Structures are given as structure tokens and as C-alpha cells.
Length: 196
Image (tube, rainbow, N blue to C red; front, side, top):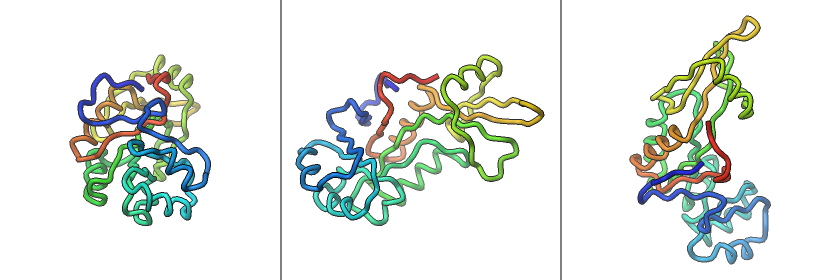
């Protein structure tokens, strides 16, 4: 996912020198030292004991999932960009109010298929090739509330809807997060990976 211009709204990616990914738990002092003074740290693990120690050292430079926001009130909070119901803009505003000056948008490439009706709101992740095939066979539309594209179709007598992001919808989500007062956005997707 590549954005031409987000202005003063930072987008951190795995290639960014400002983002240090920590895929496995590691010794706290070592990780804090590797972070330096300008880096944000995103642990991809949620063992709370080392995170508590790390939070005391890094404060808002440590970015944690929303489920840990209450336990680590000094840290940046990652708010996922993928939703399957409700209003995306409202979700951002509520997060910004709940965690003032701590929110970062976690840009995810939404690509989920949902059976219709879908009272649980849970879908199945689709691989990119399957989405490409669907889009060749069915038109897609933009949903301004969810801030994503969708297509609907039937298969074997059942009805389905697929929600998916494109570079444009991801850019719109980042802009809405900026307007809601978020500090920036994080994408764990390689800049070489494209979107539909």
C-alpha cells in the first residue's frame, strides 16, 4: 500500500526507519535500546508483563492493540481499519474520545466474504486471487458508511457479500483518522504488496 501524500499524517510501514517491529517477546532493556529515541515499537505479541515494563520506558512510542489500552494507559493505541458493520467515521471519533491523543490507525486490507443474512457479523477472509475472480464476474460499489467497497452475488443457492479495501478506500480511512485527531497510521503490509 503506497500513499502519494498524507501530509503531516505519518504512515509507518515495516520499511519505515521509524517503526521497529518485534515479532517475538524479547528482553525489555534490549528492545528499548534497539528502539533508540525516534522509533515507534510495535510488539506482535501480547504478553503483558514485558509490555508493562516496556511501556514504562517507551510510553507513547509503544503501540499496542486496543484490547491492551486500559492496562497500558501511557501507550499509543492501534485502532483497526477493518469493520463489517456500523459507521467507520463514528468508530474513529469514539476511539479518539476514549483514548485522547493516543490513537493510531492500523491499516488492514479488508477482504472478507459474508453469508447473507449474517447476524454474527463474522466473515471469511478471501485470498486476493479469489477477490480478483469475483470482481471480474460482479460489479462492486462503494459504501461510505463502512468506507470500503463491496460486491454481492449468489452461489449454490446462497447469497453473499464481500467487503474489500482498495488503495483509495485505505487513503480515505487514513484521511478520516487524521480528521478525527489520530496521531498517524500503521500498515504492516509490505509497500510492494498491492491492493485491488
